[in-house]
Image 1 (cartoon, rainbow, N blue to C red):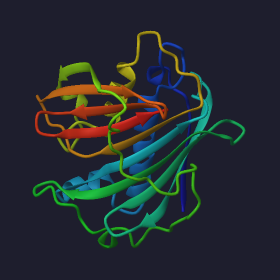
Image 2 (image 1 turned 135 degrees about the horizontal axis):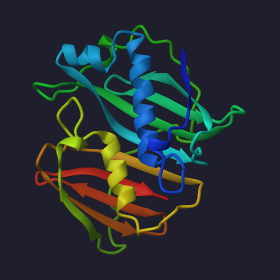
Image 3 (image 1 turned 90 degrees about the vertical axis):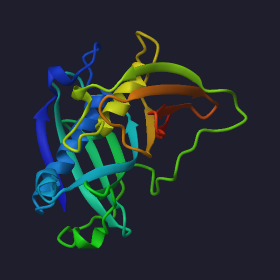
Image 4 (image 1 turned 90 degrees about the horizontal axis):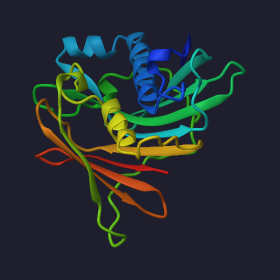
Length: 239
């Protein structure tokens, strides 16, 4: 039901303040999801051999406190079931006393790499034992849209996708978008916790494409739109 893994917070995943970076949090959650799925023979490596892959579609991250470099932590994850197209997964980072300091709720799908079609979940998830408890306060992840009539989004970054941003599906890894969002913040920014990040992944971004990021501060938080030449790839809000 639950899958856990304990480790010491690595220095190479920490930021200039010696705290685990938000990008690293997403990478670690992705890693433990992989390990959990591997125990049911539907992990990343097994699906790739079948010409398929897990892709994250929506995500919510709650950062109550970022673990410090060399701090003992435990990663914990579980499946909350499916609705046909999405598999629901919750994850936590626990401190040495068992307190959840970071948590996430995510929606995943399985994609056929050749056709890019989404597969039906009931063909893959029968072996999972579900737990219906929530790691966060989000029982549902709704679709995100850039707000209208509250100002004009401003371009804050533009760059080309390079190979180090890609994963085994040959498109930009979901954690890279989180890195990009935080990299657009003013230099020296150290956001006070707690804070929250909601993301909707709309379109994959491919090697060599130009990426443009716009941001829009609102009363609810700062929205981000990340676009490639073909479409808007990601909508997010940081608050």
